[in-house]
Image 1 (cartoon, rainbow, N blue to C red):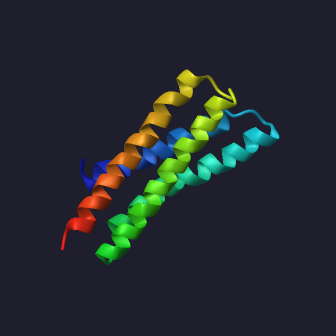
Image 2: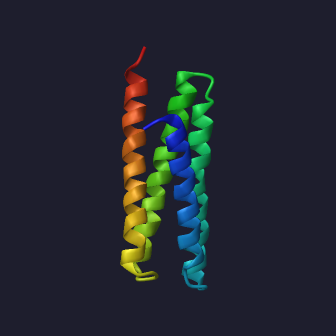
Length: 117
């Protein structure tokens, strides 16, 4: 996958998470998860863009590490949505899988970057 394709994919991921979050119930828990999911999913996209313009390998690896953490956190909040039965699992599962796939892609990218001299 190219850099531009990943920029587009992470941005689309953020948009999809926002749409999911806005469908959460207007309860204390729903509002808490809504804020958390929007924050971490948009951070995936924003920090990947930042990684793409990093000035050094160390900066690139550091930004990718943030992307991985935020993708994993996004997956966590979607698991929580499913656990609490806040939204139908069938609607959440594909996006939860996307969070996992993105984290896996960026883990591989970070390993590759760290191995290069």
